[in-house]
Image (cartoon, rainbow, N blue to C red):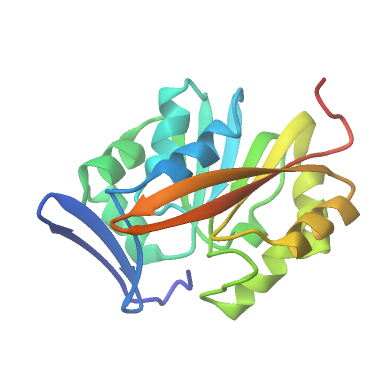
Length: 205
């Protein structure tokens, strides 16, 4: 999300909703893929997360015992809302001493040595909300992420559908890649989100 985006958090009938520039982003009724994104990073001690959302990925990491979670979120409005406890979940995440909540572009914050890096900043390369995020799904940036992992670390990218081009870019960056399909049902609609998990040169057996 762009730092100047119009971000609206609202609660209707007990359901938290995140709206960006008038477009539905997510709500608290169906968060299975956000939880699966966190699970794909485990086990891990230090995790870098691109994209805050409603805080479910970060909360899952914390519940699993991750020692440090750095969340980089481009929307200053959403970060401020989390720190103000706009929803119970966001408030818990922002208040947890293991969480470093940063306002910024994830592309500027990939440095150090992480057990896992999780990217959930857009819908994936096949259906971008913001064109400037396209660079995050290209070989150069993905290779940069892989270099910021400890041996055996994992880079996991959330996508709203399968993206062979992303899998190819990860492979070209030197990673072994696996796709994790997350079936989702919303009302009468059923579809599949896809997580791409990539391991760098030091691959666990």
